[in-house]
Length: 83
Image (tube, rainbow, N blue to C red; front, side, top):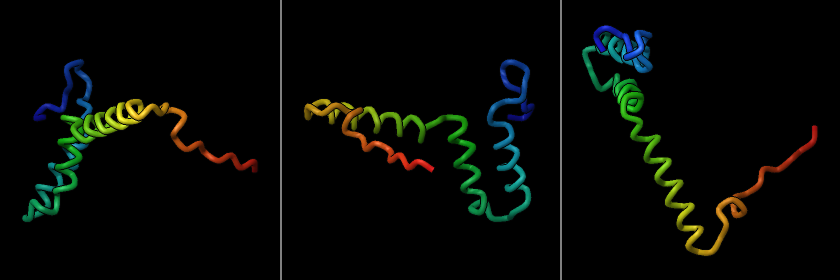
C-alpha cells in the first residue's frame, strides 16, 4: 500500500480507502475511532462479507430446491404502482 499503484500501474482499487483509514489513524490517539474505516479497508482487500453473503444466498437456494420450491418463483414480486 505504500506506493498506491496496482498491478496495472494505475491507482490500486483499495488505495482511496487506505488513505481514509491512514488519515484517521494519524489524526487520532484512539485507534478504536477508526474501526469502521479499518473494516472497510479489509473488506476491500479480502471481500469476506461479500463472499459470505453469496454463500448464504447459495445455501438458501439449495434449501428451497431441496424442499421442492423454485427459488425464483418463491421470491416476493415487487409491486408495480403506476405513477
